[in-house]
Image (cartoon, rainbow, N blue to C red; front, side, top):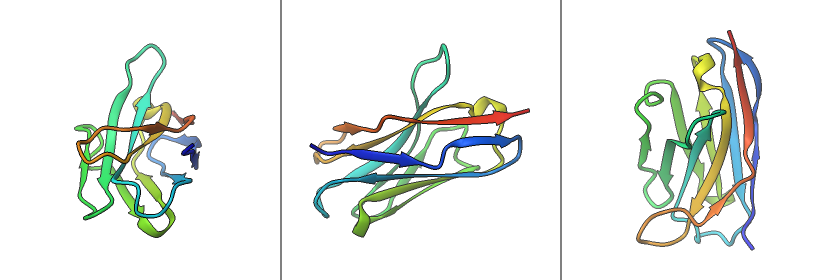
Length: 119
């Protein structure tokens, strides 16, 4: 059973930064992509960012691409999300996801980590 362990959430003021981490307990070379999603109270889950493990290509949600940076460490099956210039609307539970299949999608999800941005 693959487990995703997230860390790095917390409380930060507007304009501050946080770095989220997510480590997958899986054999090296299995992960094809890892991404982050978020869900705010009363809202649907929203795509944040994804990175492919083979070539490091990254994609972002429209409201994050200029402030967030996703990166990965293949050797440790770990993905990071550096979040800068945080805004109150970034407040949400952030979920890590991992995909192992070539056709895309995500097969495993983390438990989520709370990010709260105070105004």
